[in-house]
Length: 234
Image 1 (cartoon, rainbow, N blue to C red):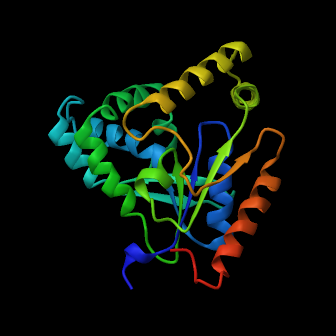
Image 2: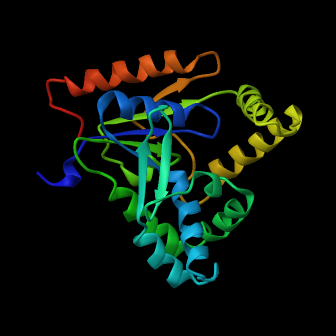
């Protein structure tokens, strides 16, 4: 049986709905691999900067994207660490400069095409939990279980506000709501891989839910599919 036949659960949705935490829980509970697709554009930008490849060198960046040496690993604290060429990169990856570079990289069609295959290459046994915005619609349209999380922009802004304040950073709740609304509109209206649930996705509004409740919902669906008479997730 080929790696392409390995089971996949996709979890899509906008930022702030709890995708990351849910993916970590599912991957840990099932013992499956994890793909944080949003990190791949940042990793491509970081790898290019490390190699002094110009961010407008589309062909060179596509080669970098196709050959990324990246691992998503679980730590003892339950958090997922990201290794680029064996080196821990979380702090650098989330920095403002890396984010700005990633936005330039993500606009290049050749990079997007290269990362599409790179994301699919994460599919291997015993299974994959894929976190993103187009996992169920574009990257893994044949996934056996597709989940799509939503939440009100106000609640997502409150969650982000709390995160920023806990890090000692200043934040304005009203501005966060406006930024989230604007990003949602851009994601939904873009011509390439717009943000939307797959036709066969299970949709959940997490506005009034905690991570334990969301995790229970997702695990129940996963176990139902794993034990389904027609066979495991495929």
